[in-house]
Image (cartoon, rainbow, N blue to C red):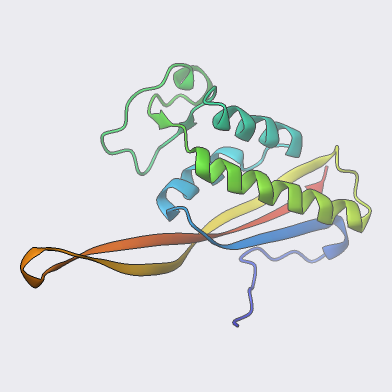
Length: 156
């Protein structure tokens, strides 16, 4: 199995905590938007935001992959951007990752109430290629895209 290298380099490893999840069954386009929304937040604020997304109370702004998306109430005031969605599946996986990095930080002796997300990035994972048989000997592709997410937190 190949080794994983973080895309963020830090000189002092004692003040940070890291975690990664590989092959998450969520498209990189959706994961990128959710990751951009939680970057720079405190761990508690990021957890509350993701829990509100799961409960369909707070939408995530979609800035790059926004084709044919509807406007959502409350986005214009907070993000100055009206277009958004409720990516529940991506929020559930990111919530697991936040719990993992918080446990890693607690294991290193960092104060978990002061943790700030220093770096979070989504990378393209493998594509699971499946084919659905159709009439007259043809087949339609059913590709499942995955993504890798890495997170680095520091004590503020």
